[in-house]
Figure 1 (tube, rainbow, N blue to C red):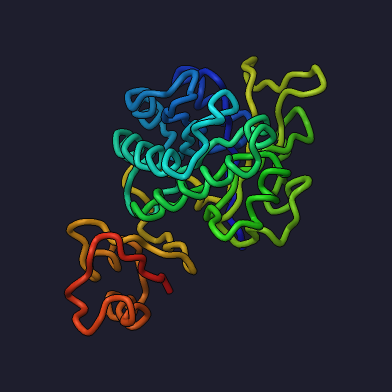
Figure 2 (cartoon, rainbow, N blue to C red):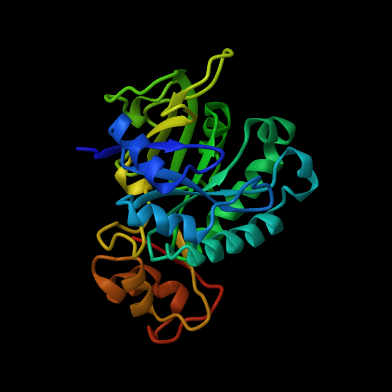
Length: 287
């Protein structure tokens, strides 16, 4: 059974006491946090997140605002890799960079429409970089962009769907029934969040007299300080060996059942006869 949690997203974070009251009003548990990025109009600060935690809010959806339609020339693989490293660095500054921590890239609809292929190249490189650093990459986008992204060989581990259908809370909303997104793409538990209520058709969405978007997410799409040791690594993907890595360290970081022995058995053809000798840049298959 999928465990889902309601949350809120606002352009400006309200003070912590107000934020808690707003969550209580919708029966929610988490806030979206814009950790930064080149196009973030207003990034949150680690101190603000700590204040939220002091008020009992411990779950967050981490969002990195990458290159947008005004920077089409920067929608490249190289820039995606660079911004992926930046996103992981920022997550660390918020104290939420434990292995398996989910982090999301904001891909606006106007960016996708301005450069469909280039924007998805950028997104794929961002996801690969974040995944290689041990975090779980997600992408926030409208349904049209997500459906095109799903056709790519390199995809995020989870998605945050922007598809507004109402202006208020629906306690029974399910991200796996999100409007305009086929149920067979990113269908598993831990693979979906849905921004389902917001301002559209000249009508605002408000909670506690604050303009917001209302969301529902699989619990495994939410980050918290210290991470969730029980979250599985993203199966079916690869991990790029980093300087100082060992097979046992990688297995621990990604919570791989069977440990380093399982990793070695799957990658013996890449590693060679000595499991203690791996090299930075090698792409290891994950079980």
